[in-house]
Amino acid sequence: MLDIKITPAQALKPQPDPDKLVFGKTFTDHMFLMNYDAGQGWHDPRVVPYGPLPFELSCMVFHYAQEIFEGMKAYRAPGGQVQLFRPYENAQRLNSSCRRLCIPEIPEDDFVQAVKAVVGADRTWVPHKVGASLYIRPFIIATDNGLGVHASHSYLFAVICCPVGAYYPEGINPVKIYVEDQDVRSVRGGTGFTKCGGNYAASIRAGERAEGQGFSQVLWLDGVHRKYIEEVGSMNVMFKIGSAVITPELTGSVLPGITRKSCLELIRSWGIPAEERLISAQELFDAARTGALEEAWGTGTAAVVSPIGLLAQGEEKVTVNGGSIGPLTQRLYDTLTGIQWGTQPDPYGWVEPVE
Ligand code: COI
Picture 1 (spheres, helix red, strand yellow):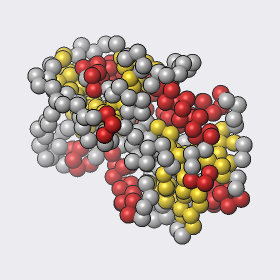
Picture 2 (picture 1 turned 90 degrees about the vertical axis):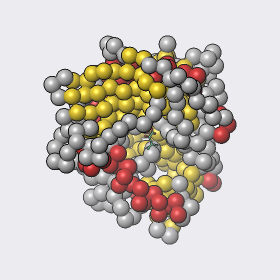
Picture 3 (picture 1 turned 45 degrees about the vertical axis):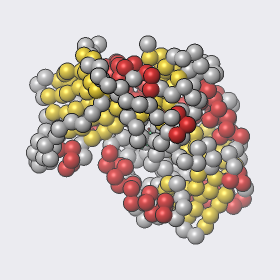
């Protein structure tokens, strides 16, 4: 159990209009910080006013990207209470990223306590509007000063929060996705299964190209065969082909999404077969041509469940479900958001209150 010192902000900031929230632009009044030093372990857990911190420009994270993060949300239930969604899953994934990036792990209970401490301090920032939530960004950065390439001996764990609406400007309307044919995001043995900043840095060029052509994001193919579908980067992907749901298996270069896992559990509980396996872009486009591809959607904390209305590869474009959200995508969205916002029962025990 952490002994968290709380220093309240003296002046509270004006809060944005919940109908005009832009993803990741406005931050709350407080942040959680905790330092790590070799020989001392994690120490000085604290909630302090949100603000800038001084770093030397030789700080390791600026040069070698020894950094990992998580994405999670706090939701306002109808009775006013604030709740998290499967926070221990985030704690476990953070530690999996820690092991790959040689960053010291954080005990799961301490991670969840830290998140609850800052969300509790900023609970008035959790929007009172279904569809809007408080996005929580826990992250760890290497803070040694120096240019030698090795694991840092000191780290900072921080949690910052921002009220958000839909991640895509399209909202629940279907997005357009381009199958990336030049860059690769990750290969097995790399860091694809972690949430490290480097994965996202590598994705920016393809994302910019796709956006320039009117697409929301790219669909990554595996880095070896350039054939099998992996993920979108800000979300995992699922396809309804015939009577089954197919999603790329977790080969090591795909992020093990918590929304992905939750959707698979829901789909299976509804008696719908869900396959986690390799699926090639060829198989997907063949299924689209024959009409077997009934629905496609992405899953992610930020993206929730986002229907995909159009897929493009090179010059070929296929429309999915006439460019509209399909019935299974809608059911997943309604059930998941119902549990998260507390408007539906939570038979799985996924929701965790912030006292
Ligand atoms: C999330 O869904 O929480 C993510 O981390 C995606 C993010 C890069 C916007």
